[in-house]
Amino acid sequence: MKDERPIEVAIVEDNQRYLEELGHLLTNSPRIRVVGQYTRGKEAYEGIIRLNPDVTLIDIELPDISGVEVIERVSSHGCPTEFLVLTVYDDDAHLFAALQAGAVGYIIKGSTSLPEIEAAIQEVVDGGAPMSRVIAKRVLETFHATAEQQGNGRKTKFDELTKREIQILDFIKRGYTTKKVAEELHISYETVRTHLKNIYQKLHVHTLVEAMLVYNQR
Image (cartoon, rainbow, N blue to C red):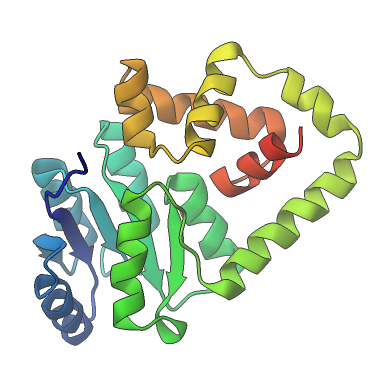
């Protein structure tokens, strides 16, 4: 039976007006329960660790520490919340820093409506990796450029993966989130993240999207 429990969401956004607008929208959704709203990175880190929401919507630039650092700190703590970046920044530096830190999705404020944000949250819970069109295109371009540089060596790199790493990629391909993979394999969330970092290094990729492209083309 499908889990009908509302999706617990935290929002990290330094623009107070936008934070209130977004919080109001999500609060009115029967599928979502907003459990925390933060305008600063440090308070967000503490709140997320305490509340353990299913999904955290987070901006990149915050008054104290960056959203990327929040993602890194929370992930290293072993908290299994899934991070969905919501920002105005669409450059490679911010994009890949966030994805490497552990964000599962990256959407741009100006090109994403509030209802689409709600849909993206549901997609994250369902195991997806929502990205604005311009971002998805950039990730794919980066992957293809990397693949061309490596040539046929990509298969050799894939062969370096351990049985456990292949098992994790197989679960993710089937739609499991990082949290659900940990539960299925009876290992910690942080252990899964460590395996993913090793996978990225071996495949010479930066994101889960790129890793799955390599996996699907093996």
